[in-house]
Length: 313
Ligand SMILES: [Zn+2]
Image (tube, rainbow, N blue to C red; front, side, top):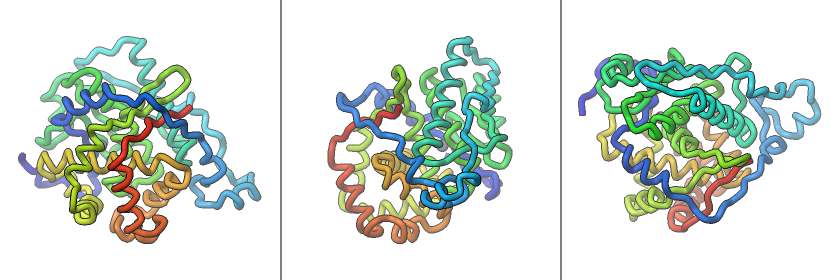
């Protein structure tokens, strides 16, 4: 795999690997028969951008951010040599709006009034590679310095759809947490790209084969593997060899899936975002109940059991 020699620190490019396509699609077929309904309790337990406590918020309602009207968020989908009919376009917009709503309601991460999503779907591989500017084999990228959200249409259509959600997740997160740790940013994009609209509910299947893969790979070396993952700065993340690249996405996905399960762990997730890039190990030691040891124990337990799919409404 060739390296790009000239990418600078501010050109944060968040990508998704094409190599994981077959795996991703196989996983998408899976789903648990049981469903855990996660309620949107965050409105009470998590404050918004100001960092106020819930108590402080109720005392000063006038400083609370206004309700977000997600329907007014601009979502532009431009295509070049890729065809999306009106229905599919409307569905994709609906999914992205649901995604913005999940971030708001369950994580207290609300996009700014100026926020919009500009998706460019490029059907021609060469045009896409030129736009990306690096030889990496990716299915999409979000460039934080310019806000470009670009998706390759030269993949399976359902993969392209998932990638649109994946890159939109990066765009949403960059709006509030431009300095989010890379592993967490990717884990959240991996988590949310799996969302499926089922009537009025949003289902995120658990992908048990992915969980078992991470469990198998970690056996015996959880702490060192976690330290490796959490220490990956943005450039180092991009520069990983293909096998490590996939494993890192899977690890990050599993941690986010675990942290999305309760309102308390979602609060932890949010605090890790706020702590920013740098030493996530230190952040976990400081933020997580019972520190890094507690985190490792909980992660190992999560990885060793079949669980329930996440359902939001
Ligand atoms: Zn990504």
